[in-house]
Image (cartoon, rainbow, N blue to C red; front, side, top):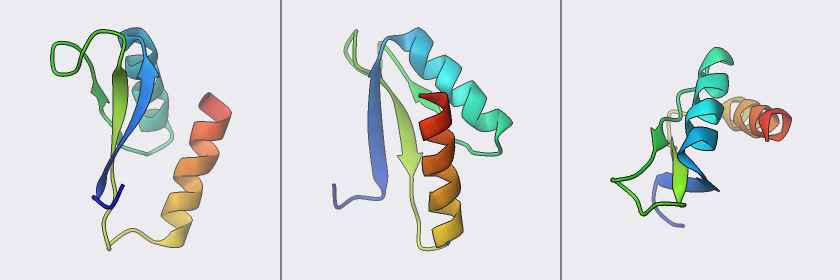
Length: 69
């Protein structure tokens, strides 16, 4: 996507909420978006990127996601 907001679809709302909580514990803020905001079965993380992020920030996010997922 060419937009700064990236949705990482995880499916079930519970998975999205738990993943968001674990990322928060790692110092990363990626809120869970779940029904009724999105269709049932398509809960996701809302990852927002900006020019203020550094390569190290992205590496931290990817590393945390690999460990959690």
